[in-house]
Length: 196
Image (cartoon, rainbow, N blue to C red; front, side, top):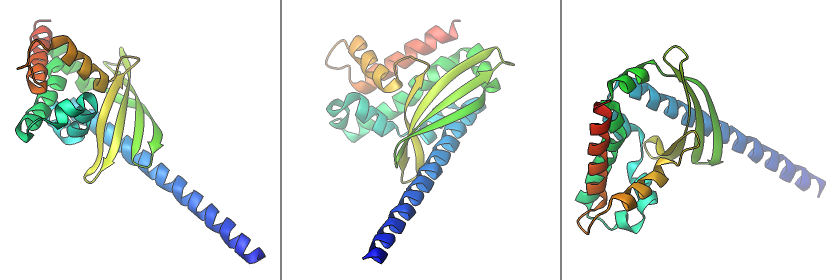
């Protein structure tokens, strides 16, 4: 009987150690993916960075639920492209685009939500220390690696929440589908930012 108890305890210790090892590995992978995204933003092709680093389908599903899930495939694809354009729109401001070229990740703090979901809080610094910000990325493990499914800057609402608010505040009629509203929001943001 004693040997059975010892075997069970040893098994539990081994499983606990393996679980901690997997969690640490997941956190390291998520941090690397978050840092890679900001490195891609520094390169300047924001739309491509979003396409490569975000799981946009999951983000839009979480933001809009059935409204998004029931769209025809072509409209879902259009929504994903509109989201990438929406994220890229502020970079029409040349000062912001130049600032992003100087941004470095000073600290990355992972918080495992579960085995396949990690929040990574990034302390960002740029423009020789004149710019400081905190961004938190929520990443999920997918079949093609870690992908971003949400982002929050400081204490602001996350993108997942903001998209729903933008949609509700901008929808004017039945033809204002998710991609139409996102395209319009991107165009308006780009216009505002390019005039500054």
